[in-house]
Length: 327
Image 1 (cartoon, rainbow, N blue to C red):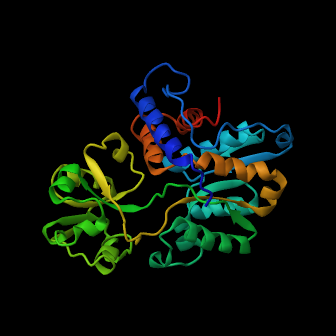
Image 2 (cartoon, helix red, strand yellow):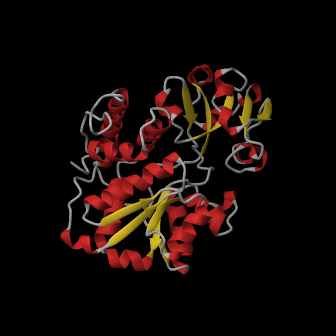
Image 3 (cartoon, rainbow, N blue to C red):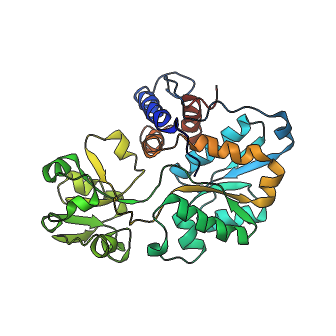
């Protein structure tokens, strides 16, 4: 993965900028409330007149995080001079993959772990936990189909062990390994399939060696409610949940320090022929605007849409402006 020395400071400043923007939601600012500029690490996107000869359709699956990413890519490519439209209602990953193959769309964001398990027959425990390894495996498979996947985002959208800040402080928890010796006192809540999943109870027991006081299955929509109500000490959350941004003083996720959970970093999937026709600015623009997308920033963008009720288009535009990619 391409790393720039400015990425860390850029991401930190961007997270601050977006946080201030959410605080200002409801204002009359044209950019949806983002009032502080910051550097995402890649500089402003430069429009290339030659790109105007190329028409692109950027797709995404039909849930908020995907729609935000689809808008970020679409708006960034438009800023680079391409003729761009979007299709952000593709449904499942199977539908999205087919749309790329048939030329209905030019490309879409996919999760590396989803690609490997849903498309290429990998079991979750076979998916690399590191972003680079997962991307390389997925890309090798995509290339057999005439597709290609660009390098992954800094953030990963994956399962995580979450708890309240109160519980984390009580037991001095920062990583999943910190649960060793105390998990026997704690209850874990997760989805009904959690006991069989490597990125859930099965992996915590088999690969971390943890045992829990009890496990109970819970509807996915109640994963925070059971923590708030004291029904669970630990709950399986998602790393990009908006609550982790909006209520950061209340909830925390524990670091997967043994890198057991499969890599859920985003890779942009497109046809090789489309990438060749679009020229180098196509991939370079995608990778450029991904540089600022660390975990805190993605949580913040999800919070803007899911909690603050911005549209994905507004959140994407605010991100690109705050990061300095667009004016």
